[in-house]
Every structure is written in C-alpha cells, then in structure tokens.
Image (cartoon, rainbow, N blue to C red; front, top):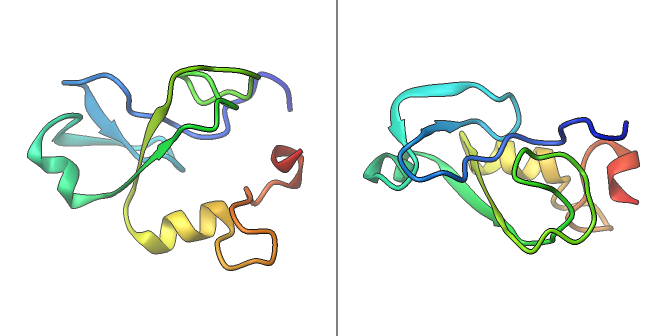
Amino acid sequence: MKNSRCYYPSNIHGTKIRNAVTGEIYDNCYVGSVSEKNFFRVIDSTGKYDSEGSKIKGNPNSNKLFFESYTEFEKFYNIGQKNGYDFLNPEENE
C-alpha cells in the first residue's frame, strides 16, 4: 500500500474543506473560515504523512484533518481500543 493516500488533509488556507476519510469536498466551507467550526478538526503532527495524506517518514509539517463528527474521527483512529490511536488498516500502524 505504498504511496497510497491514508487520509485527505485540508491544509491550504482559503481552499474548500475536505472530509479526511472520504475526500468529499464541502461547498461553501473554507479552510481558515468560521465554517471550520461545523466540523471536528484534528491536527496530525506525527510526521508520518505528507501534505497529500500519503505515508512517508519525517515530514516536519502537520496536516489539518476535518471529520463530520467525533464519532467519525473515533472510528477512523480506532479510539478506545487498547492500542490507542490506530488506523483501521493494520498496515498503517507499523
């Protein structure tokens, strides 16, 4: 699964917000605007993913992720499991 996208970040101020899981682009919702408050947003600062959401090592830049709800975020990261923040795809946890 190398070079495949793990999530869809929305990093660029003024661009339309994208759902981190599905990649859906939301009309009239822009990064850096008040519309960000309509989503559950997370900053991924692990350095494991590039600005396109593909797995790499050592990215010094963080990615801004938008989810429709905390539940969607929780499911995507497997929150509540004994290992903590893990992707549903076991290959991504390595």
